[in-house]
View 1 (tube, one colour):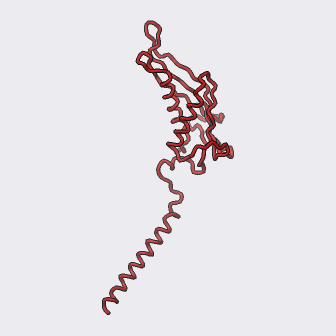
View 2 (view 1 turned 90 degrees about the horizontal axis):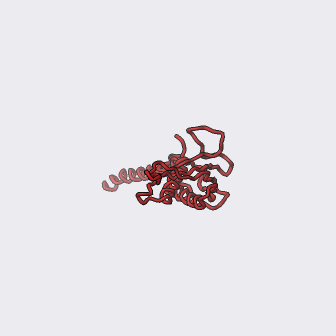
View 3 (view 1 turned 30 degrees about the horizontal axis):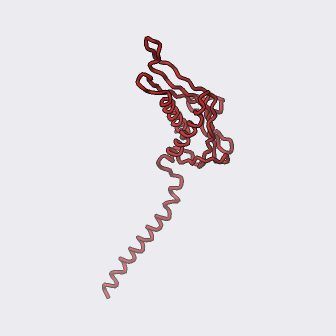
Length: 187
């Protein structure tokens, strides 16, 4: 009889402990609903999908728009919580336009052959929500323009066997990183 009485307080404590654990688990999601962690914490919460139309290309290099579109899409998919979609009715739309592409000779040999060259690409970009709100704004230099200008260059040396194609691809990838970085929320 004594053993049965002594088990009662232990079972009561076990039930009480179980109830406390269940209550804590039930309250946990309610207390952490607005808390975000990881890379998702630096991006907008109301946006889930982005439509990225093919980048318009105003230069004579016919493949720049397609290559830049692919690089931007890959960068968004890899670095952000957003999903790129082909649907124009997505939560937001990111449009870009290549406005300028050139090569700048940095140094020449005695024979006037270029030794070091920069591959330069300049684009305009804007990101708007479905409701028309500007989501990407230049926080460094305020302007009345709705698009942000991005310029990037990559150096190559033809004498060393480097090509303009490789330098252009490096420039495109750096531009894509800069555009996606601009999509992050400001502190």
